[in-house]
Length: 90
Image (cartoon, rainbow, N blue to C red):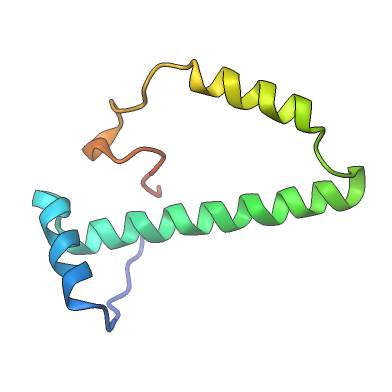
């Protein structure tokens, strides 16, 4: 995957905590994963809005059932670097 060098201005404390969490993969990888996660959430949000516009709101009973089923699933702590729900691009 092609990469691009960028310059960002971030809160000093946020950067320090991110560096500590990033470990050997480095800050760039950590920030890239965070951006991927945020972009995925935005895409899902747009999709949900489109579906709600087309089909109406989700039945709350069904939503509660789905959330209960999700809570019963095994932990996802076995994912790379222990960050739940983050996927690397590629």
